[in-house]
Amino acid sequence: AQSVTQPDIHITVSEGASLELRCNYSYGATPYLFWYVQSPGQGLQLLLKYFSGDTLVQGIKGFEAEFKRSQSSFNLRKPSVHWSDAAEYFCAVVSNSGYALNFGKGTSLLVTP
Amino acid sequence: ETGVTQSPTHLIKTRGQQVTLRCSSQSGHNTVSWYQQALGQGPQFIFQYYREEENGRGNFPPRFSGLQFPNYSSELNVNALELDDSALYLCASSLTTSGVHEQYFGPGTRLTVT
Image (cartoon, one colour):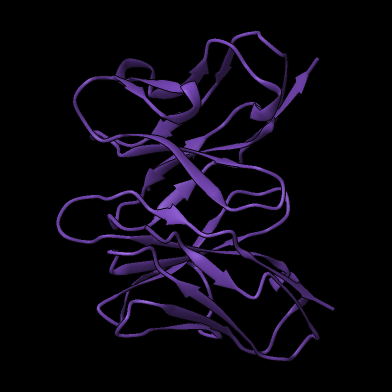
């Protein structure tokens, strides 16, 4: 079954520093991949998605992600982090069924002054 | 464009009781999916409704059931509540035409079972 793994449970970065959150997927063919962000007590907001085509995808809030088939990865990046980026980040892949999302366990981002 | 809305925001129930959670899909969307998010975990897929029928189901027991109405809104019903049902319940809407489409989530309903 399609699944994703987020190796980092917590990450701390300084405001203004660059950010990379890791996501590894398990799937034979080209997966449909997503990154969502969840602020405390809130629902999930879609940051970006990869279905096919250009392997570098741009999202909202200055985020981007790169699909690397050779590494089975879909890492999320941002060149300069703002304090408001502190949140929980989830990577997700569409399941075998084609309709359900399988989520990773999330990475909690803390931004320090 | 109206986003996904859910009600109530918070709910406290006693073990053994029944609960109904509600979701209004985003304007133009015809499909609703429900997810359970336990504390510190990623969301887990419960089921999806399309054209008022269950379109797929995750690994949840039959006491989790749902409905979708002609206006595409949806309900999640949980019978015989257990302590482990305490979680954030998220509704997501999408437009099913062909292929894969992104899901847009509501703010969730926080259910506490005591």
